[in-house]
Length: 118
Ligand SMILES: [Ca+2]
Ligand SMILES: [Ca+2]
Image (cartoon, rainbow, N blue to C red):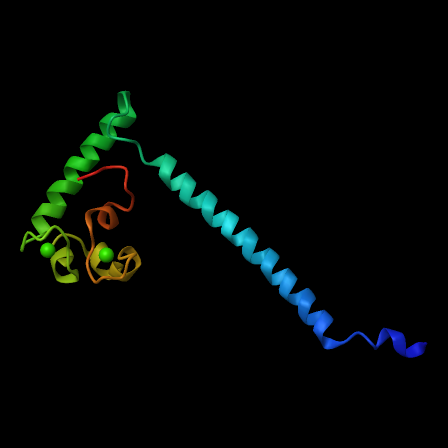
C-alpha cells in the first residue's frame, strides 16, 4: 500500500510531459498565427481608398524602384550581392528574409508580404 505512490511508472510522467509540451506548442502556433494575421492586416492594399491606399501605392513605387535598381541581371530576384547594393539591412538579414531558402529574395520576400503583386 505504501508503495502505491512510488508505483507511478516513468511512462506516465513522460506522457504528462509530452502533453504539456504539446499544449505549449499549440499555444505558440496560435500566437504565431495571430502575428501573421496582424502583419497581413497592417499592410494596406494597393486598391484601398484614401490615405492607407496612398501610402501603399507610394511604398510599392519606392520598393519597386529599389528592387529594379538592385536586380542588375534582371532575372526578377535578388542575390545577396545585388541586395547589398541598395540595402545594408537586407544584406545583413538576408537569410531571415529568404523564407524559401533558395538563395535569392523574390519580390514578395523583399517586401515581406504578398499584398502588392509586382
Ligand atoms: Ca537578380
Ligand atoms: Ca527566396
